[in-house]
Length: 93
Image 1 (cartoon, rainbow, N blue to C red):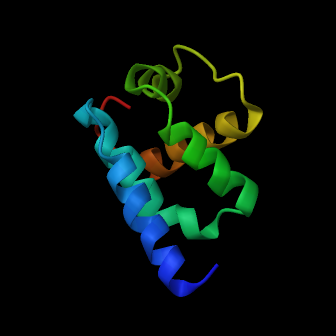
Image 2: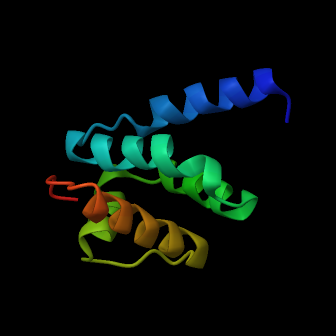
């Protein structure tokens, strides 16, 4: 991917991390900033699919009320939780 396309992708993803449920902004945005570049391509695509889900679904997954049907998204949810816990995430997610 060219540098220009990669920059455009990151801008699009940053905007997608901004959610109606503001409690999701920090865990998603921090994960994008700190971890996204280290994910393999499949995990990056799973994160993008996650961002296409409804806020309430994402919140339910992050707090453990439900599990996504997509195994790759399950893995991303686990990574977001671990990152949020490691970085002192004090939001509800």
